[in-house]
Amino acid sequence: MMTYTFSEYGKERLIIYEVNGSTDMKVLMKANKYHMIAITSGEMVIDVNFRIFHLRKHSSLLISSGETIREISTSADMRGYHIIYSPEFQTEMRTTRKSPISLQLKKEYPHQEFTESEFELIKSSIKRIIYYINNPGHLYQSILIKNEFFSMQLNISDKRRKQHGSMMTDNASHQEVIRERFKNLVEGHSDKQHNVSWYANAMFISPDYLSKIIREYDGTSARAWINASIIEKAKFLMLQSDLTLKDISDKLNFPDQSSFGRFFKNNTGQSPKDYRKDMNGEKL
Image (tube, rainbow, N blue to C red; front, side, top):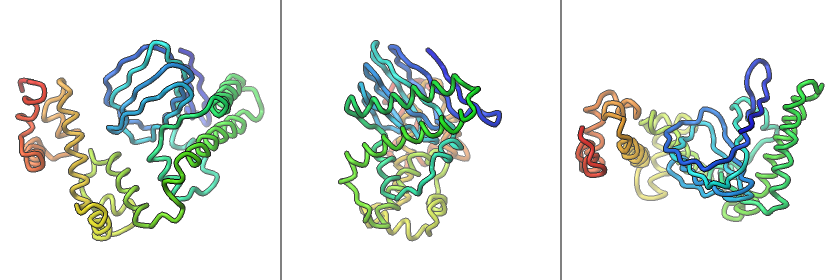
C-alpha cells in the first residue's frame, strides 16, 4: 500500500493511501478527521453511523469528522484511494458560501456513483495531487494541491446536486433545515450529549422551538430522537464482547452503570444484562 503525505506548517494536512485487498474488519472508530474513499475497481461495504454503504467501481464516499465507522469489508479485487484530511484543510476549501440545501445533500448523500468519464475527472485530480505531493520543491506546491483538491470536491458536488437536487429545493423551509441539522447532530454526538439544550444551542435556537419543530414533524419529541440514538448505539456496543456494562456506560457518558441501566430499561423494557444475554449469550 502506497502512502503520500502533504504536510504544511509542521502538520499533516492530507494523506492519500492507495488501497487494495480483501479486508473484513469489525471496528468502532470515531473519525477525528475527514475521510474520502474512491473506488477504482471491486467493491467495498462500510458501516458509517449505522448506515450501510455499498461502494462499487467508479464511486466515492465522504466520511465527515465526528462520524463513527463500525465495519468494513472489501472484495479481493478492490482497488482505490483513501484520502484523509484535517478539519483545518477542509475549512480552507470552503472558499464559497454553501447554501443550506448543499449542506443537506452532502449529509444525506455522502455516497456518490459516477460514469466512467465523470470518475476519470476525480481520479485525475487525485493523481495530480499525488504528483505535487511527490514534488515538494515546487514553488507553488501548496496552492496547486489545494486547487486540485477543491476542483475534485466541486466535481463530486456537481454530480450530487444533479442526481439528488430535485429531491430538495433551495426553498426548503427553515424548519426542514433545522430537522436535518438536528438529525445529523444527534447521529454524531448522542454518545456524549444527552440534553436537548445542547443541540438547540449548537443551532442557535431555543430548546422549546427545537422540540416544537420535531413534534410537528413526526409527533414525537426531540428528547425521544436523542434517546433512540443512544439506545441504538448502546445495543451495538453490547455486541462487543470485550466491553463491560461499565465500559459501555462510560462510552455513552452516563454518570455510572446504574444510571445507564435505568435508562436502558426505561426505553426498552429490558435491563442491559438481560438484553445482552438474549442477543449473544454472554455471561457477565
